Length: 336
Image: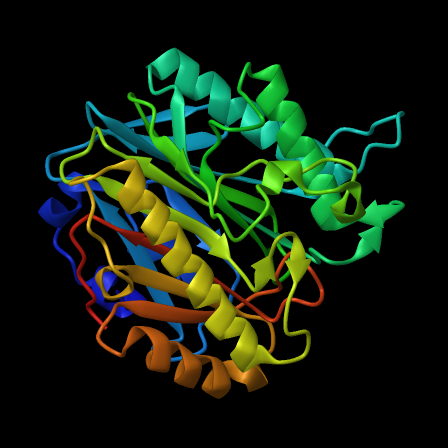
């Protein structure tokens, strides 16, 4: 929804809202104080300059706070958001970067909340922080993020392979490390892509700590089943394909999404018959100048009738020019 439309919603409209993410330049004042809010500094490239991603339940929600986290929940799921400024991290004599410490601290708070509140299964996580490809404090910042996330998973008693959530990590404009997430009482099913090496089995050339996410996550406990597809790029096996060709990378990303959908159908016969045209999409474009090429290719492969928002963000590898995430199975409205 455009931020301007959210600002006009009456008070009762917010009763069943789980949480809100503002993409772009929107004013947080349009969201009531009791609603979890993630501010994501990724400029919107088409349509309104600021949009709100609104996650709703089909019943009234209960709000709460845990440390620096804000959340809302129903009896089956919980939405939460946290933002930590790297500059506020305590000094570390061991040389661990501020980003690694912020990531670790944010996820530790998430897992502590989920354990205490009784929503143990992290379903989907979105991660944003600036300068994702920069080499600072002796290593690439994306590697630092992966280290902090993996440390938090281990400390929280979570597996770092197999039963991991869908996720994405994108480079934003300057600002805090921002994490928002959805968790469930009942564990979802992790889905992998037969065209790709599992991210948690990447070779060390992509960093000393592997990424901790599945290619998708399918919640069969929800009716109808809900599928989250992680940020998906032009990777086959573990290697980037089509360096320098943004249209070819877009097409390859869609092929990977189609492969994940095929695996989801096999994992839940009769449970999900989702096709690319049934999903809602968020498309991250590294260079604004590539928007037209990405949008043209996306429409050729997916169509122009699906809900989609295009934003500018840096992708986790410098040679990746575009990344696409998607979700389906839930009801969708596109108010733009």
